Length: 423
Image (tube, rainbow, N blue to C red):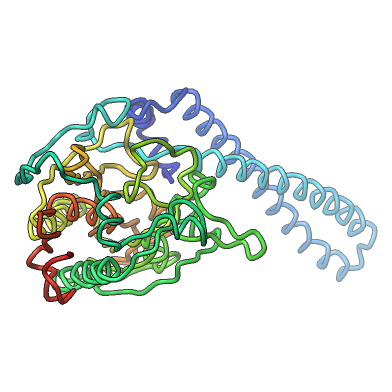
């Protein structure tokens, strides 16, 4: 959530940033925010003045009664009662204005960093770099949804029977390869200094609000109404919320965590060939890295996190590219995001496998996540990234490594899964 103080002193910059995102009616929305804040401060000032006057008169009543001036005391009592009624009315008006302001702020996305390119959709994302090359597959090469049937390692139909579309069963070597990737990604993150966490996979509403999934993605999350809990869309949410309402010491920074969880996304409105097989699931596994640091360090940290993800992709022998997302494709809470996409040879298309984002103070403001130095508290910057999401990595491994003899397992995963070929 944007800070009111930031909007007040950078209104033109905020409007320009929101326009880069193609946020509708940005100028009028920011004007409404500033008008509501002016109204809030005016009511607050009047409310404080009335309370102060009422408290002063209350002290007079006791003194007048002590001096035997009962009639004067009753007059003051009447005035105090009137002030209390006015205070109640002002308090209700203040609460209403504060709620309206808060609700409006929740609808405003983060302001993009200056390095974010303009654009309206993923077609306008900036390709930063390309790495590696894919094998030349024969004419008989199969997409992964056919390969998993051939080798009986993933069963989409069984998942559809037991749960529904987008909830596959992993079987035999498919399940073992999933476990191998999870452990490999976790181990590499721990080697890079991230502290492993196994978080809950359900969150309360406060946690969803804290990291910005609510109210923005309310319809995309699985909601258990009886308990008012949400299934997590990513481990980012519970891990970052570990630090909700926390003041960290500067010497404790940076905070670095890694966690593995299943992730749940309704993906309402998704259909068509681009969601076949592992390309789009309602439940999938992911290793997530989360980092919290000082504002002046956060963009160096973003670069480091992107480097970590690229190291993983290179170790798997996958062709990949790095994209700087444009304003129109940027996530609601992010100030800047780099996507990593792998090339899936049998599908002849790029698949997003990681998004690494800097949220600057946007999440921290919602979370009230700060650090303290010289008795002053300051908002921190939060970052996270997929390192990595398993389904599309698996799709690329299966398709790119298929041979007449079977599917070759990347060398780095062989010690983790105990076999070098799926045949």
